[in-house]
Amino acid sequence: MSESVGYPPQPNVPPARRVHSRTYRTWAHVLLWTPVALTVAGVVLGLGLFAAADADPTSGSSALGYLGLFAWGALAILSPLLLGSFIAGLVMLNRTRR
Image (cartoon, rainbow, N blue to C red; front, side):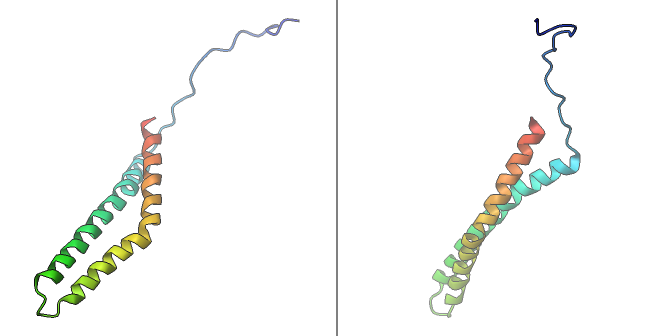
């Protein structure tokens, strides 16, 4: 028997494009750029604290160096969370552009 008995051939139509809301796109940008901003701020803060601690060794500013280490330690501990947020933002942004 023939496979197309009584039925017309199926058209080759791509599926309808899903429309994402403005809020979805906004959250995509927030999830994408927040980890970038926090990482840059943490690195700059740590370097600034290291430079301030190294600039004047007589006034007991070694606490600034420890604060710089704390800032970098916080970045190291939070890096999986920041990376996860960045990847989620990339996926969401990719979905809005498809």
